[in-house]
Length: 157
Length: 157
Image (tube, rainbow over all chains, first blue to last red; front, side, top):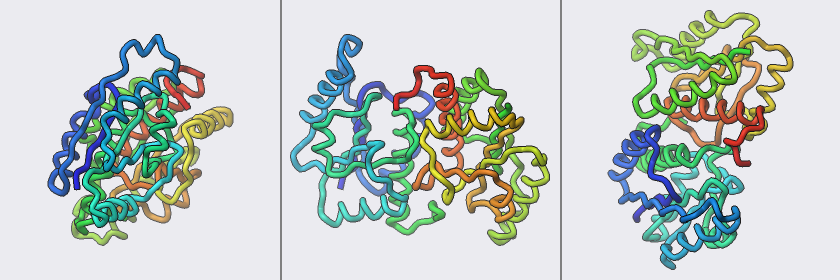
């Protein structure tokens, strides 16, 4: 099973880059893992929020394969504990999913079409975090989930 | 009102240092803000988890003044939205609190005596994050709360 993390626009900011590198490298000991940064929509400033979200959705949906399992990071989604995330990944592997995609949306959220396409909507917290920091939090949690699956020492519940 | 962030042991790891610096500087435009890193307990490896937590608690409690308002970061605490955090800070300022202390405990949690001393127990998420990353998440959320209080542009709800 391969894990992909898709983000919309902007490469990693300095203040998250180093941490993302650390955790991505660690995840790669458990699963193939890949980041995909989807180019931002051009002339975004001339679009309404809704038009922007629609264009972003088109870009994302055109890249998704039918068999991809899409996990949308969404504040209105369901919260998981770290153990539940580990179980979630284990279950996807058990079901022989090939490709799990974690999608972090743009600053204004994502279009309804993506919400409909997602098999799972996951909220990290009641708090709103910047999308750059979400990248770091997500990579750490995926690494943590890997160590929980393997019953390794990193995580203290 | 002054904000302090207290942490137990270890200075900031590289992968969080830059982000913490960015957000701490930004917070300082709204509130006086200060980090205090409490030295780790010596010979920790020879102590049980409970002894370690007790020693840490003694160190923390000896540094607290009676009038300090203690917010404990605690997984079993209450979750807040970013708007609720802003309201919480605003209320503390309205009540003329002088000193708000956000305490991030050690890897094994904190001793019962600190839990009892805390006026508020706050959970960032159902997920468990490393204490280094909690420092970064906390500093970003405090900055975000400041911008919400001032009705500035940073936060999209």
